Length: 214
Image 1 (cartoon, rainbow, N blue to C red):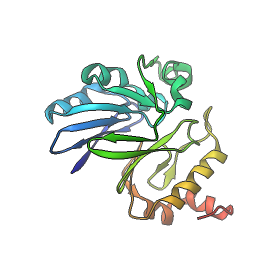
Image 2: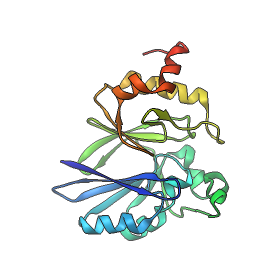
Image 3: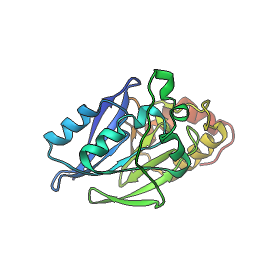
Image 4: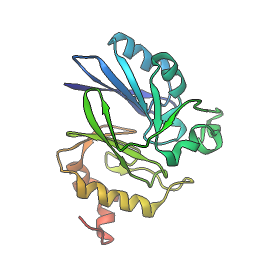
């Protein structure tokens, strides 16, 4: 059985998730955007073996504790190749706006579209729009969506690397692919479901009105 622990971190209240198998204690971290000690303390408390650190995209509020979590766990940091440049450049990951200069010093660009994590096969889905290299991680009934979609909202597309046209295409593919009972763990805010967003998300409904397909 898998457990997903949400830890809200950083100046933008980002959802970091520690996902782990209860029996084995093997796990991974999604979007450690800040407050590394909060994340490390939980992993120590649960005696977890963290094997991967996965960034859904390269903005500072999702990568801010990458270095510390990697150093503590010896896990490898992964990101989509199209966002990889952002990890080493504060002007691209926007940490300079908050008076910081975040640089992730060691990482591996994601080249496989599947990973075995915590005893499950996870699919990596490229969902550009919020950034060029935004991804979702999917297994069984769970989706870790980063800043693609929130509860009754979607990620912004006005930053460099963002694209409303790409966001629309990602949304079309997302809602065509996933059933209503799939649980979405977003990058900010409370969890939701595909069905709730299909019925209640204004932005999703606008995309439908523009003649998109699903």
